[in-house]
Image (cartoon, rainbow, N blue to C red; front, side, top):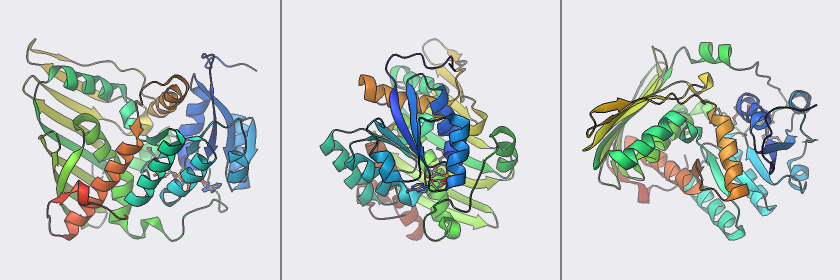
Length: 362
Ligand SMILES: NC(=O)c1ccc[n+]([C@@H]2O[C@H](COP(=O)([O-])OP(=O)(O)OC[C@H]3O[C@@H](n4cnc5c(N)ncnc54)[C@H](O)[C@@H]3O)[C@@H](O)[C@H]2O)c1
């Protein structure tokens, strides 16, 4: 049987580690449609999940053992879609085996492990990308180019990422049916036991990623946090290395629709961006006002399949040397530091914490 999507002459052979939610909803369909990817293999410790995904997506090989998948010479790169605590140890094994790696976000759970992994990959000449797929949102990409080319001196960034109490009603409607298994391999303990850490890792990583995508590295943060019942809210002031100032709002979960976006002010223009729940596969709606022309532009940005675009960008870097359009290991490490600095600031009564000093584990 043929499909209409594998257009490129060079395809990257990937192995997907993990057949859980993110692979079922994002990486497997993304790999099936990506124009420059060949789904060489899948791997999961759960037989039922692996067999189900093998039946649906027909990878060339299906492995219950990660070590066996890594020994497959036709797996050129590994996509790591497993629990946060497993990211770096499994990425480490992949790099040791000579594979490029796309790691789901957050890159890891400690600065040290992320930095050591990057050093190993650099030493071996292998590429690491982190799964911050919002960088592949064509609405945000348009706004980023506008900011870099037209906005002059950029002084101010406001970003918000507010999860919704209606999130699962929406995702249950738009995601494929998600299969789970008691045999799935999970990190020890309950990652949700300490909710502030869990939300910072899971959601705060997206908030900081978008801020740094537009503005470059954060220099320091000062954060406050409050929670009542199911409402957890952080307000984070930040200074960027560029000299710009920013304020970030992370709230899980508001009694409203999903609410995410940013505003950016420059001497030559302004960006307003509204971002949708990613599972709607809808590009951000951006309005870019240019002071010179006094016109706002809003791109149609039709292709909102960020997860497929992320895989295509990953393959493009490996196959063709195209500069990374996603998040690099350095971006992943900076985000880890920003999350740790935020956590520390909250516990030090809103003290300013320099990102350079933010080390340790979250
Ligand atoms: N980018 C996004 O928008 C987004 C959205 C959701 C989740 N995520 C990230 O995706 C990651 C995975 O989340 P999930 O909900 O899919 O996890 P999950 O626990 O549902 O699935 C992970 C699967 O990997 C398998 N696995 C783990 N280690 C293994 C090993 N060593 N060998 C073989 N199989 C192994 C497990 O059996 C399990 O089936 C998390 O880091 C999460 O933060 C990202």
